[in-house]
Length: 390
Image 1 (cartoon, rainbow, N blue to C red):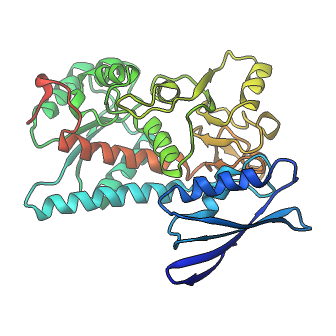
Image 2: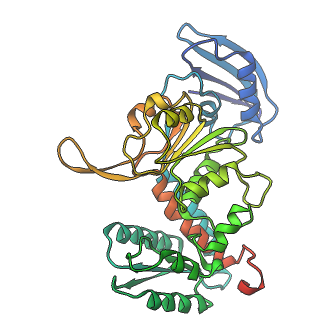
Image 3: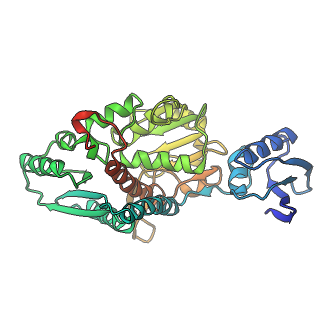
């Protein structure tokens, strides 16, 4: 807990870092910590003291100008190898609200300037319970931000050609900015054909092959909402990826693969990628090899739908864990509950950051669809003359 005394525009601040042992932290470590912290716009600072207490903690005193950023977050992010506290739970609901509030502010500005609101069209084929919930959440988020949204409910019996005609019609509407086809689709419909039918500049879910291809070569593109949500979490928390070891469990074309591609890609490209050393593990990765890779990982992102896949003995202290997996199981009392791929309770004792399930990645995924709709409205991504609306 920091104690702050303001005087003449400056501040004397003491903060305490609790650690498990003294061998992993020294004066240089603390100096580096302060450099990282104060490099975020707060200068100058002077180290006044650095001392150990009898309770295996370290006190650091500095003088600085008033501090406006989150000191506790930076302490936990920087010192991760010697900790005696649980991981910071990543609250996806809070991050999603930040994103939605930013979109809402832009939409309000557009309306104030006399312009129309962005518009999103969502196609729901059939009545899959999970899909109905997802679509409802997207419509609710759109309403909150001021983006207009139509939900086209189409019977499960629709033919592929009929669905393609509906998409073609939506593509032709100049005031329709984003199109989202809720997956999964009935088995008699070719999902790839449907995704590719959505015009790339309206493809707010990022499934059109042109968006996939552009993303793979590190060009600006719409990224699928779940991977985009994961990357947004990493960015907003200030989690460093450059030079880090990242493990992605799951290789699906819409989630695991895009995340891995972004994490390993050159950060100088159009997508501000991660520059991490990335390993993909999947259903054919032997358990001992999976543990070998996760044990060395600085960042673990898992999207397999296998409850309890990642346990505490498989991770190192300070790892960042993002759990995308979601499975409905029965608890000890026989009641249904949602769980992720990670043994949350045990892994949170070692991780620096961890997402819960539910309430982690899910809300941010929805928010990214809304953000992509605004990007589509503004025509920010150049797909060439064929798709230009300017």
